[in-house]
Image 1 (spheres, helix red, strand yellow):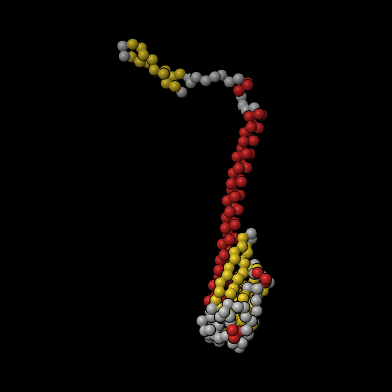
Image 2: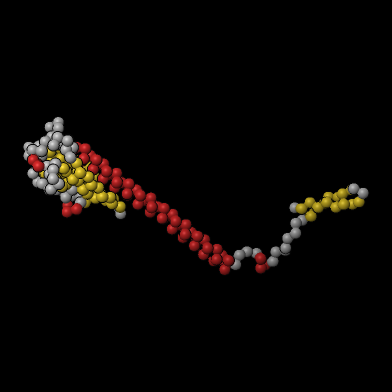
Length: 192
């Protein structure tokens, strides 16, 4: 509503209410045409598709990062545990290292416990009871040539004899979803 004030002369005024100006409705201006509705639907569809693609990229990036994080966590945990415990091999004798293959390392630690690690069906496993039970440290593990352990003497040459063992190299690839991470380290047992 519009309030209109009229001057009547000698400072007197009169107020009146005037209806707002609007065009009279006709039959033609009663709503939207089919073409206008179709154009709106097409525009909303295009905007919805663009928004969905942006959201999907975000979800995909999150998922990839989650896979990468899981693979890295598992691989790092397994690698650190193996390195820490292999440093504790009691001696480089056949009695203290009964198994030394590319997929299995069994040994006695400085406390006389029979310990071991192995790659079994794509999992890195650990035992501390002479192989009676194995605990899984990491899953979806692969390695070059199928071996995770390489044994070196003090000259850097590969060895298969516990008496000449100087360095244990550990190398593997952990995979989660579409992400993978390569891990490798070399461990020198403290008592050698």
